Length: 124
Image 1 (tube, rainbow, N blue to C red):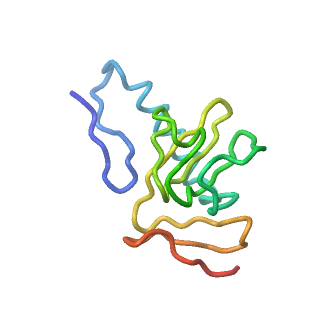
Image 2 (cartoon, rainbow, N blue to C red):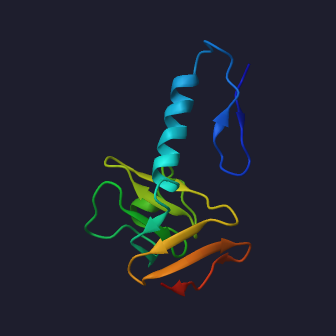
Image 3 (tube, rainbow, N blue to C red):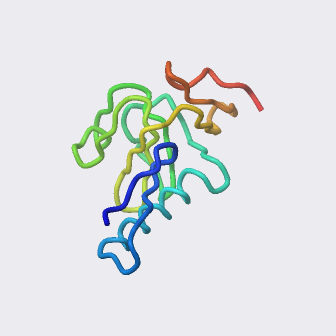
């Protein structure tokens, strides 16, 4: 039986016991949870459309507008407003869902994703 995707978080579930392919799906689930949920989502900045000149594994950003540079590559697949995280080897883009919160380090603000995009944020 093929796995299903949970619509709110985008996590895969529903593999049959011993089903082939569960390992890659479960690895993707665990990475997504680690990157987006554990300890809350936090990003360095949200005013860039290309990667900064200096970054390390785990650095995350909200893409400000149409991606350029490495974020524009077809392997990343990013679009404006995506959360983009460097995993140590490559950039990975995630499409935000309504209700996501993120702490923006450069602004010291908490922002929420809504139908119109990321909110202006509140200082905390």
